Image (tube, rainbow, N blue to C red; front, side, top):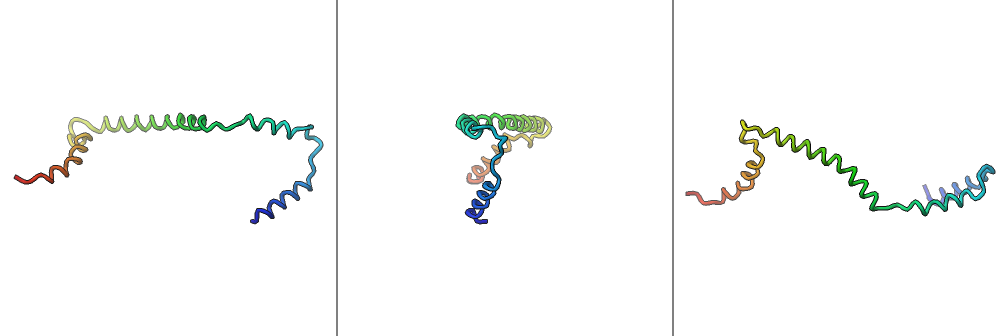
Length: 100
């Protein structure tokens, strides 16, 4: 839809409906006077969002920590994550060494 046509329709609809007498005197001025007081603080919004995000992050950390702790039982040596990472990282170094 053309924005100019939409603006014309909205203005004509507003002119067709005159303001009611029930509206208090200078009501719009009081409302407009309140608007500058409601300044959006970007830092406060960021802080609130980060505090709300901290709870799910801690919950995920606790779940993954418990899973890591309980999945590495002594009977299964291959489930030690630190050993698996060392073996994966050092696999390329071991292959590059000359054979005896």
